[in-house]
Image (cartoon, rainbow, N blue to C red):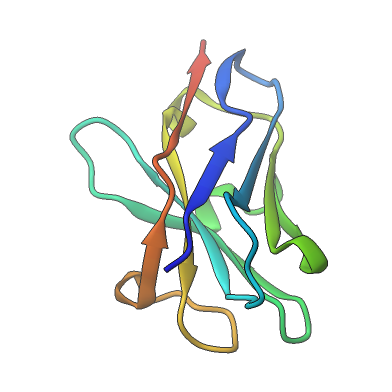
Length: 124
């Protein structure tokens, strides 16, 4: 089991940027496919972006394509979510998670360890 810690959330005006980070709280010898999810009030949690350490492949959901970028530091099993041109509809709690598998993982059921989340609020 991996304990994940997110950071970098906050309040920003529409059009602004934030960079979220997620890292294991302790040492881990394993590298997992990672993902960023978000959950807005009254909505289901959705996958925003995912990354695979094998070939450093990435996935970004259509609604944030061109604005959000997922990247990672393989040696530290750390993953980032760069969010640009933020919109009020991006307001949500953002969670990072680790999955089983070796490629980019887009099935939420495959994610087995979750961080506690970080709040992102975008004002209009």
